[in-house]
Amino acid sequence: MADAKVIPFGEEPRSRRAAKRARGRGRSSASPSPSSDSGPGAGSGLGSGPGAAAASGSHSLSSVPDQPDGIEDAMPDDKPRPDPAQPEPAHPDPAQPEPHTAAPEAEGTATAEGPATPEDPAESGGSDWDRRLAEGFAFLRRRVTGDYEVDEFGYDKELTDQVLMSLIRPLYANYFRVEVKGIENIPSDGGALVVSNHSGTLPLDGLMMQVAVHDNHPAGRHLRLLAADLVFMLPVVNELARKAGHTLACAEDAERLLQRGEIVGVMPEGFKGLGKPFGERYKLQRFGRGGFVSTALRHGVPIVPCSIVGAEEIYPMIGNSKTLARLLGFPYFPITPTFPWLGPLGALPLPTKWTIQFGEPIPTDGYPPEAAEDPMLMFNLTDQVREQIQHTLYKLLVQRRSVFF
Image (cartoon, rainbow, N blue to C red; front, side, top):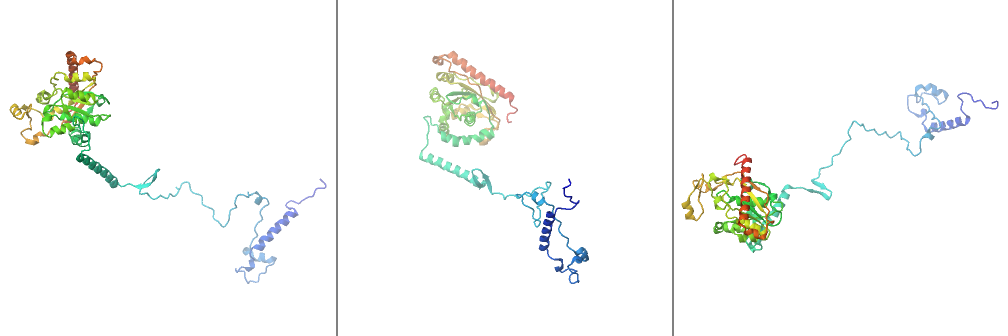
């Protein structure tokens, strides 16, 4: 301890004081001299000696204090030092929302497949009309040149789908507002025999049933109706009926259609059901001799009962002029509250609300081939179909709220 050098309190080593004096001389040489400023003290006779600083008072420049050693070395070299000449960036206020620059709206809708394309409703509608016109001209060209097909019965599928059904559909959908039930009971493939009640003075129920199958069946099947002889004796009506797929109500035509896997429709009541008085509405007449059952048994196809409610009231038949019927060759001549008193206007049907229900099919494929010749079996099956249709009619009549709604 005797050899240790005593350093007074507050006195720094000589080497550090020399380094400070050298830095101070460098800063003072870089700063301008106070006497060279053109201030209030210029030309006042104050010298630059030791007393000048005391005489200048508050106008004297104070020296920059020295930074302690080690501060500059403590700053990392890879971090840039702030420049006093550059203002510090303002920190964003979290309470203030960031400015959002809205992108200009595109004229169309951009998709992942490509750039945005302008959507013009008139242009899209025009293309749809162009397509329809092209299809219409192509249809007319095929009609003129004869480039279309009909089957052996005269059925024209293209004309039926594009023209005839389009003409009947407004009456079906908007006027009678037909409600269809049980369309799934008609098989999706193979032949079947649809048996329905018949009423309404004019055979509009057959046309409505044909549209119901055409527009509602999930497999897009077509109903081929069996019509009476009178239909094919009338001019114009004969040709239209053939084009729509109707054929003569005989066992031979029905069997040929079933062999081809068609859906065949038959109304066994015939003119007895179509021209019955209004007081006997929804009471089924006799179903003939059961010829439709024999046809179904020969080919093993199911029988689908069909019940139609609403057709009885379109022409309330309150009378029948048998004299006019014999003169015109008709089975009956109807008299209704509007016909013939209002002339052609009386032929307008009343806008009743219709319901068409297809019942559960009755299978016939389990019977032997000779069963078609058994009269007792045909009678029992005919009565079963008739009772099922009658029971469904009563049930639908109880469920409906009104004749027109």
